[in-house]
Length: 631
Image 1: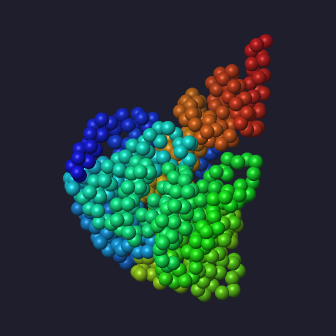
Image 2: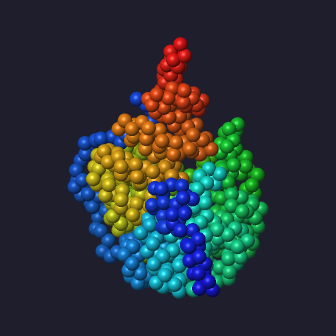
Image 3: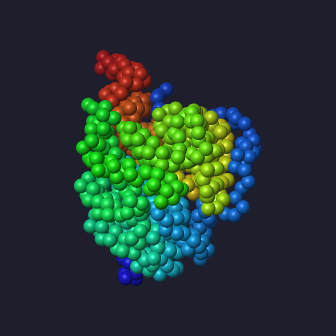
């Protein structure tokens, strides 16, 4: 069975060599990032990066960060071990990397809601990392074709790479070439996870990953069949039920009725303290997200009113009661306070971040706070038993409301409340503190306190054990160093973040740093990578490429760079203001290249989508020019 899968993969590689896939993708810069099999006077949106004098010395910032972090970890942290595995794979030291992976796997356990810590460890190991890493994964599988771990790591890598290419936006707005590359990547992941499970079906993380991959690569029937096999092996693995429920949302291949049927079947008959009861709260959050998405295009009804109306139709009273019951103190007491807090945190944060869902998020946040003996008030009289997770969620509410000083107050309270928690080891405690530091860094970023952003990010990096990076979103330090004028350190940090988690936003900020350093070639390379992606920064990057050419007087190259990205001129992919901006810049270049007719057409289009004063001025000037020419 495994042999057939390996032959099948080799066949695919021969049919679609790397250069053919790069052509399918249609983006040279993106192709460089993938493995060889993955298809890889004017107004501007993003002005040239400012040239600033360094604010404070790097030495003083590092000293403050070390003081904030305190004593560094005595032993390699979990994240540091993940980085070590990544480096071992890059260097073709596959036995070393495999040994660390197997050690973490053996010491992991299946808790009420997660297989920890291996699941998150695997996620950190397999973040997008460039062609060198991908080629090394292929060599590992070739060297040890019967290794379940090698196939598992490569499967996880291709799934993450696929989503890195596709982005997390609505499918209708994904560029066709990126959608095709995504499907190809997840099909490679499918082949690998099948080989991994065939070699070793005893790893809970492999089954959970398989369900995620099959959702994207195979559809409802295949994922449903795999789910039945998975719960036959691990009937108490909550992650399997959570992933299957998510796939039954209307945005995938399910329906509201299918979701209700699923939770009734797999959560309804369980005891009142069963971890699976949390599926009711998860389903409520999923329905809230679906309602928000459905209301996003409704311009006639206020968002909150629309979401309230839809939730009134899809969320039954029985679901309300069941979801609320999952937040009772008796439930928490039986399942464990800390595991419960870790499980409920992503559900609550997702509800808080759901547009129009504030009323529902607030209700369940208060219920969770009561269950965890926490007071969410900004000025609370008794926080002696507060839970840091609840404080972070309450801070997130203030953050989303734009009240950043209040968010900072609650994040600081969360730090103090870490004393109320029991941690199994220092690594877990350091990671919890580091996560709050990154929350504070994000808050200080919104307050434009860039020196503190760098200090808190560096302190978090020390605690996590990863230089210039941390799990998940990590671009803040890179951008803050740019704002401080510390360009050399910004380059170092940006590269470290990219190496460790492939952040596209960091690529954009690195382009800004290079632009500030007058290294236009390096800046264009970073911008092109982002401009061809599904990053929210892609339109900024595409326009910034033209800005670089304009600043050097290369008007024809600036014009061609705009035309390379047709999505800039389509409201299907970008907002009207961006289309207006792109046409305005097109008008500028055509005008100064002595093409007044084309320039006027572009300026007229710009004014159709927006009201830029610059476009009005050029339009009048162009009409005057054409009037003189026509006599």
